[in-house]
Amino acid sequence: MAKKPLTINDIAAQASVSNATVSRYLNGHYEKMSAATRARIQQVIDMTGFHLNRQAQSLKRRSSHLIGMVVADVENLFSSLLFKGTDQILAAAGYQIVLMNADNDLKVERQQLQRLLELQVDGIILQPVSATAANYAFLKQTQPVVDIVDRQLRGTNWPQVTTDNYRYSAQLTKTVARRGYNQLVVVTPPLGDNTARDDRYRAVTDLCEEKKFSRPLQTLTIQPDTTNAKLYQQLIAILKKRTGHTALYVLQGHLLLQVMTVLAENQIKIPEQIGLVAYDDWSLSQLMQPGITTIQQQPRAMGQRVATNVLRQLAGQSVEPLTMVESALHERDSLGTFAKK
Image (cartoon, rainbow, N blue to C red; front, side, top):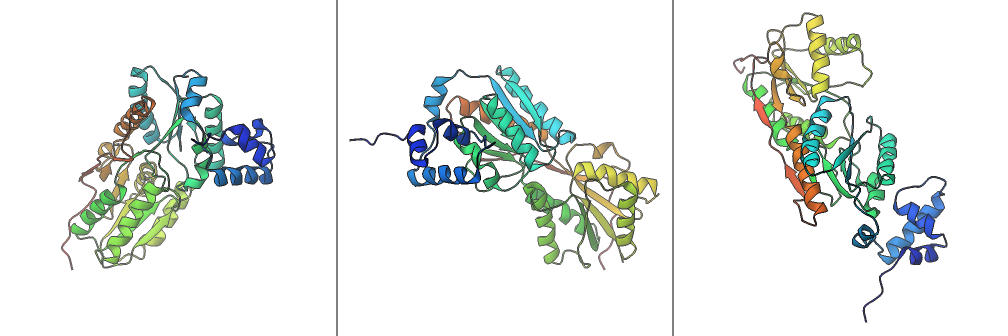
């Protein structure tokens, strides 16, 4: 005889809490819930192998035709293009996007996700602030379809749409080396919890270990509140020590604009005095003078693909666990060409 599926009532009884408390826990609403209660409920879930019957839940409520989208930083043009691509697909299918800004803050992101759950959205598209899947475990017990975009979230089964940051970063780094530069200076926002940026940097360090450059790799980490004057001081401190031909590699499009501004304000000429390349989030590098050699991503295409995945899942169809959207190397005038010594 088939074993009767566990219900929320069963979990509540075994954990000695109310049904409402279990329901709040499963939906990520931990307000006024002690750590001990949360641990007790999770222990019962782990011991029993309980999981929500999503099909049964979907019968209990009608579709909201809302899709929640949480981006890391709404002021970043990359996120705007990502949203535009997503909206093009979902609007045509009769869905409305509820856009939320995480402001690059894990706590804010958690609050925004909880608001989306309260709105009973049919799906969530997440550009995660963190690379740690455990920070999003509360979503696994909820009903909405969840898809990850841009930054990979390792250790999860949610479908993900991104680009091969490692491969394209390696391609760009090899281009700098081929042009005869003997030192690379990476200019980057803080590393460590952004898989896209970390993969780009890892490609550089791997190639430097292969002795693609005769001088050691230099890394300049720029905090979000760094002023142009401070950035100039940091750049000059490194550039004064350079020997031979040096190129800057900026890992983010937003930071590229700041670097270009600082170089222009201080009359540092590209490529005569220093080479410059970037992983461009925005496609703006072609408008700069000189044009910047970059890897150009396709955020709008990423948005379109993740939206298509969400619609397929809502229709009960399977999707690829990992989709890589193509990027492209564009060589422009920001690098010189030198003979290898």
